[in-house]
Length: 154
Image (cartoon, one colour):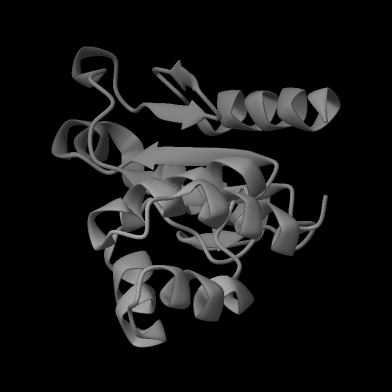
């Protein structure tokens, strides 16, 4: 099924009430991994909104993406405890190792690097999350090992 067909199916099953816009956007992203920008006119029409209003909702909420997600998401904790325990150096290493800055994808599209503000691992800082797995006491060497394992799993 094409992305357009997925969007059409979600919109066909959605109530045309404006309070159902967020659930519809979640359903689209859950199925496709992102909300395609070319779907905005159809979404806006389904909810009797302007494209600008729909775009405003998508860009306001950090959860929504307008591009396909990377295969692996690496989140580096940016909270104070992790920063004080080497988080800044770990972030610099991660950016160099993945070849991208925060809020960006690696050149091969396999990894997205994102900040997270507390993983609840303050006693064992610095912490990261690779996909849904939390890792504590992460050194640059351990980071490289975790990334190598993620590449192998792909």
